[in-house]
Image (cartoon, rainbow, N blue to C red; front, side, top):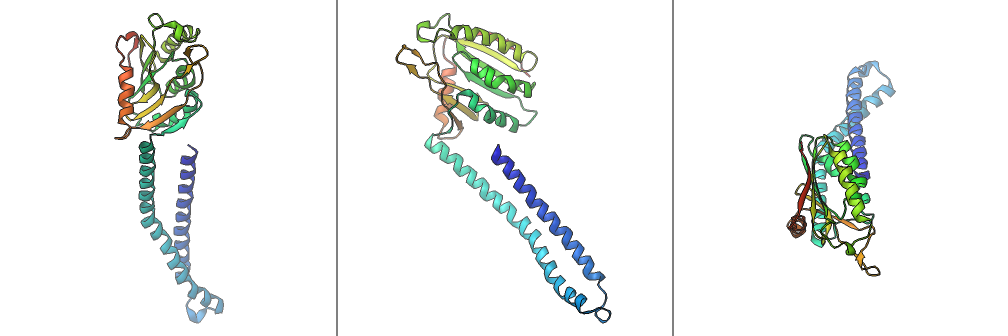
Length: 267
């Protein structure tokens, strides 16, 4: 976001320079034609008359260069952006967010904001309880984008899963999250809440079919349970090199044995 603001500021300064150059060009041209004839002017006016054509020529060159080179520079910048994105896909390193879901909030908000205002955006979440996704991300996202989102939350069915593998408070947290999500999305966002019968191999969030954030659970070897700690999320844009990650996320989000526990009509 900071880079985008800096680019916008730089663009505004460039346009301001162009406007000033054009205004100065017009003003000097008018002054040139208003100068008295040589037989009625002194040495100072003659010097000014000699300099003005060169100054006007220089000012003409600036707008021409600006108009011609600016599209070329933008094409180069677009090419650089594509190379960076391809590099991310090639290494499969993604953009890293080490601070769990809360670290992705601004990034996700920016992705949603860039979508056309009339487009309904599908957000699918694969979670343990959905608590962090709801409090850190969805609460503000739904409020800021009324009637634009269809949210699907998939979390553990603690009545079926082996509870000895999870931190003890997760079952209560999941039940509270369901009620919180219902209240949050009522009349503002489409919502489906699914429960699946066992823990997932990966967690994450998909925005439409083009954006994916994924994290991989860890075991707490001292307790024998899944670790209750912040995870590292990585972002991937869809490409031929990352297609398998999107397929993997979709496969686990369609885990057999799921039950739809709540549905709120979407926009």
